[in-house]
Length: 162
Ligand code: ADP
Image 1 (cartoon, rainbow, N blue to C red):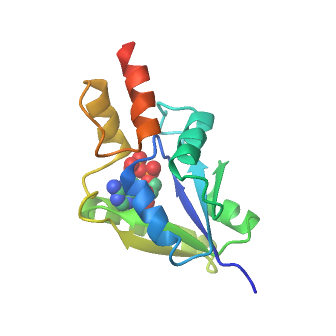
Image 2: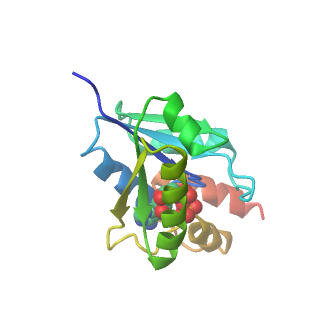
């Protein structure tokens, strides 16, 4: 039988409980999910690709149904390359919606075979974004409730020195 596959793209700089929640729910719909770390010219990250990958790996407890990869260029090209059809995205607020609606519409115009599936954030995570987590950590606030322990440790190490 054919395995169902979805791509979950994002910056994951770093991975948060919000991301992991969408991933877990995505795995209830698809046999395999590829977490595709996007290279974004406009977003200079705090973590390198390798670190982001490592932190995700450490946070998914060896789940064989998750593949971690990275890509640059157009998402539609990556989705084609891995032979997937569906892309998963999380929606936190109205502000996410506008951008996501534009991206999904462009992608669907470029490749009508590709479809984007949106999952609404869980009530416990709607306020979590990688950006706000980094801000809290930079001022030595606790991020225990927002990110998995390996990410928390790494953030502490980075901001201890600053
Ligand atoms: P961020 O905006 O946190 O840098 P990413 O670019 O890494 O996020 O996001 C990847 C995907 O995960 C996006 O679809 C984003 O909307 C989703 N996502 C991020 N944080 C959450 C959250 N707390 N709840 C639901 N979805 C989220």
